[in-house]
Image 1 (spheres, rainbow, N blue to C red):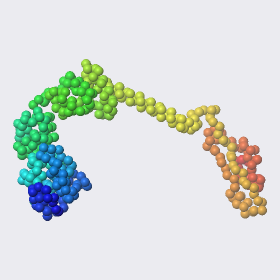
Image 2 (tube, rainbow, N blue to C red; image 1 turned 120 degrees about the vertical axis):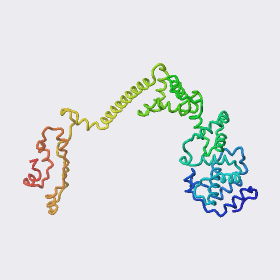
Image 3 (cartoon, rainbow, N blue to C red; image 1 turned 90 degrees about the vertical axis):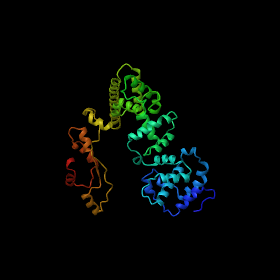
Length: 382
């Protein structure tokens, strides 16, 4: 692959050194660093990015802010270099960082810092040692007032045998090593002040920490979670939690835990009342949707709605007497059909007496049945 004429000599040497390298194993790389394998750029794209963008618009001062393509370029350079050196693990040493620093024209400590931030958490998080704590105490006073955690981390990594990234340094100092942190128990005034700040700013612990002297962000967050631990069991909403905080603020002379217990009792009673009201509305809805069915079950016999009780049937069409096979078929299978409502009739009448309607039935009885046959076919009507 041809390089642009303006490319740096160190970049040209690096490309010549890694010319015969095989295709990178991105799945193996993904075991070490956090990358999206499906979006990783091609070799040609990364080379073009370095020659046309990276070395032109990036200088030593603003390289502390890395774009996504910058991260891909760093990963690509480290993986290519270690592949040529036939190193199975993706763990660069100081010599590797010096070489990559010359290629990318970026400070080696800054490259290490960015590399650590790209690693998976299980590869970069380990217990702090006494030696690390002492190094951080010695150098923190120089950078803490400036709030420059990147420079502090670079200085720390240059003195320590382990490598840390800025977030680890910041949390270790602010939550553990800072001598201004108080280790005493919280009194009622501090708790009330914390509740007032949470009601005002929300759960923005970093902002609240500026208004509470001598307490770290972790102490503030843990203290508030301890106060409101019983609220999690009841699964209260954010609005209900703010209502509780306001209730505590309006009653500063009463114990906070007693106020929380009273609030939860009232809240549970309110929920039960709402639940009962919804149940009543649901029963009314069922009665409206199933009015006729419920009415049949609940109304007394005198008020029961009238239901059809006679045997209704459709009389047969006019028969042709000369069609004897048809008559024989009629004898076996009558052409009319019964539509009876025995179950509804039994609900309306204490005793079912179909013979009361024999006179009505005889008006529609087929005239081709003999009396004997009619008695056999309709015994309950004769």
